[in-house]
Image 1 (cartoon, rainbow, N blue to C red):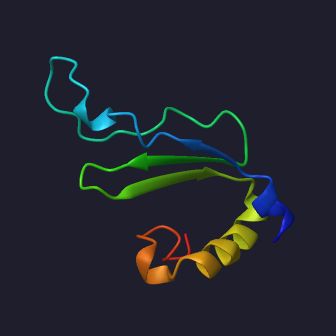
Image 2: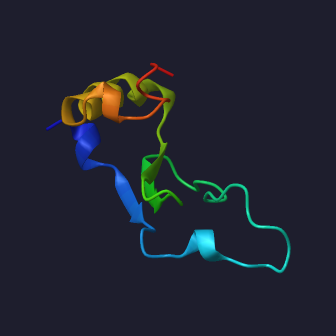
Amino acid sequence: MSKLALNIKKILWMQFPFHDVDFGLDPEEYVRTAAFTYARQCCVMKTPDGGVKVGISLETEYMEGFKELFHGLVPAQETGHALANGN
């Protein structure tokens, strides 16, 4: 396992009902974390359709290594749009 894989902090927000929040206005259009405070953090959230959204904060020099590690675990056709397209 690469050193990068050992140094990623994960934040699991799977149990928080973000998509059911009601501020008394129109329904929310999009829900996400406000910001990552530190590099090498990962936030996992449920989507309204039952999927999972993963946000990752990495330094630029670690992105290629992370893509290789990630695609070794999850086939590209299952990853959605960002990493599957190489962005």
